[in-house]
Image (cartoon, rainbow, N blue to C red; front, side, top):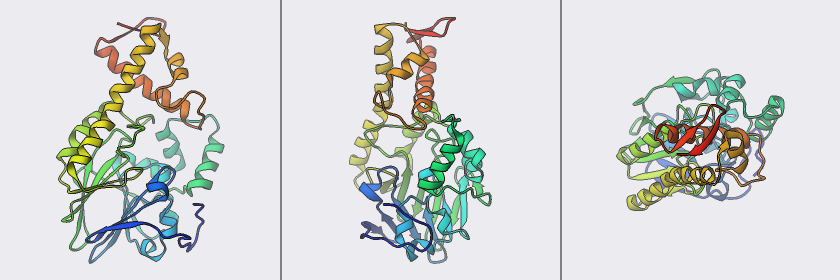
Length: 309
């Protein structure tokens, strides 16, 4: 898909599934990045949306009638339809609010992921229509929005970003779990605002959030079977321990610096390049190393060299 500004409509039919007043419209390849899956809620009083992925640019009037956007978190691929609905009220968890309000906030959340800020900005504006929303309002854990016969409730699940939330539509019991996407890639916590520790806690909390249906931003799409959901959640969670084991294997082979471990990679294949690959690897590996030092699995000497304990 190559969406453009204006009243663009879909060139191909968009797959969808409906649960009462809630509709899930699937992005390209089941919402695979850079696209995502769009959730729309037809409240009797207010029409609402969760995030605005690339597919939102192709939905047409059904999306363009949106009056309220509740963001599950802020990343470039979740903001691509906001330019179509400039009058809609936009709500973001307070921990992600600066990210959506300005370019400086977005860049700070990434953690200066690229040395060429102008190229990064050009890419976000060209491919994701990134435009700040200084009018966005903050919300906190437990916030609710009454749409008339439906209600949205926010559950703060930080880790992917500091403000990542699961958004549940009541009474339908549809939970939008965002970038807890249950993909084979595993949890992503490589930004400056991300936290491995918080992600672990959020994944443990997720099964306790009351829901009957679970919708991911990417890849998996919709789960209507709880057992299937829990199995995939367990496999997703296990990726964190698998990364730790890989790092331990590297260090058992020989002591290494953080920079040397980054070259070996735990997220992306060696040779893979993107504006944020090195930054994400560095942040991810550093968090694992910090945990392992505390746990006594790894030692760090005065030169900054790590070795298996």
